[in-house]
Length: 96
Image 1 (cartoon, rainbow, N blue to C red):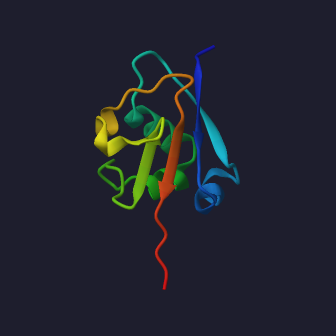
Image 2: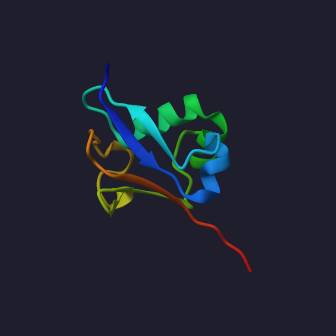
């Protein structure tokens, strides 16, 4: 069995992940944020579309934090992940 990583989702994304507040992602060695996003898009297609555009790039209003650091300030989608790291997805919500 592959090691797994828990990805925490904000409440606005729960419906896109079948109501889950967090999801577990299998992690083969050398996994990155891009691998996590690919898995999420395969398991939860609606969630995948909410997180990434048609080119597979992270949407500008979506932020991913790894151990409290925003991934764009780390190595972007190439940021390595492994079991025990904290991964949190935040989707900005605008309103007025």
